[in-house]
Length: 172
Image (cartoon, rainbow, N blue to C red; front, side, top):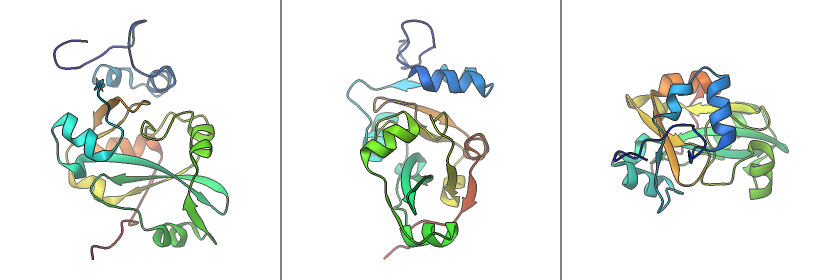
């Protein structure tokens, strides 16, 4: 690691192998060089924002829900919560719940706290809340609870194959 926390995908790299392979497959190999590792962890959006030194809303959370039993990925800014009723309506589903940890790992190949917005084991439907577009750069998990990477939000949405939606919980 250099002094900026930047890594490459050589044999000593802490970049998650599945994520590194997805980057190469998507033609985004240069992103691996922008992955930052935080040994103390960046499992939550608050921890990630503090580690990176950015606004909480610049963190892109990758959350797996179960819509009528089928996994769906929701990308949400770190300062907001997902309104499951809005997700249900968007999907035309009968019931939407947070997926259990084993379903998250089985579907994505990653543990909660490290799920990236793309590069998953299984292809799922992806919804991205429009709030992500409020910034020039967002930071997302890079396959582990200790790694994040920066990307322009419009590019992230496109690479993830996401549909732009409004599924953020309304402010009280």
